[in-house]
Image (cartoon, helix red, strand yellow):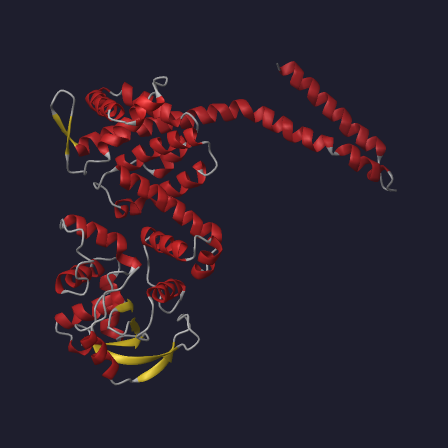
Length: 438
């Protein structure tokens, strides 16, 4: 995390700006927590392009505009700043925030660096700027706390993490953006989850779980070769959450199979409540069966298989490792084919014809959903088979405890041996009925 080079003119201007007070900021990591409070023109302050609240959205905008360095080449320049304003204005509840500021004015100060770059209060300042452009002249100024001129990037990251959990300053983060912040804190803390947990004021299992979900998202994004971005999977948190928890302790081969089935379901739009039935060892085989049995997917299966073979032939490790037993890779092949295409693309089939991705995704969603349904039915059948054994095992565990309990119970003055023998007779009669029922 690195901030833009200091601008001496902006820094001099802010240093000379008259303070209207001093405010204690408990979240500031230094001992001296008293910061200057100033009023700044809403058009003069600069939005932070390093704010984790919009990191995923920035990746999407950079891709849309075909400019990878959109937010890094000149982050404080007019182009990046206007795009950042549009991102902030497009977030949920922005209109409600504008209306609240119009009616009640600014209630909490924003926070800026010594160069006037917003660390906290980006959305509020964006709302004030939009109101000013709509001729609400009372919104010309934003009150800001000014950080010391020697504030480091690490201190600013820690401040952002503290403010993210502070009630007075909290603004919603998407889970993707929050996970990206946790990832950066994890590296800053020398990969110490206990430190990250303290910084985020959340249990270690929660912050580690968010990080594990992000790793799965990043795997799928990497497979897409730039066609997908983390923000594309914001609505799939539940699916990634259940997948991460399930594969955490699985053997690598089984985890890979479940992951392929899940990834194909996520990309094709299957609901996570259906996908959860695929958390089983044969999930990839069940999906492969449905893919091959679906007539509308025959051309896609052939095209994906050809692409998969090309990958194997071009693999420099194949000569070194030799030929293994042939494996059913249809799920992995199809995933590799479609994840690299945007939803608006056309997929070229083996015969040279093309099929719109939306049509392909609908067919794939149906196949994965059918596999999930079969998995659910198999689980129900297996539960029916296993249930008598599970109940018998539970009963045996309880009966095995009796000898130890009887020694102390029989020594008690209120013990009724005849009543206990009656209970044993009931058990024997039940066992007889169970044997007869076979």
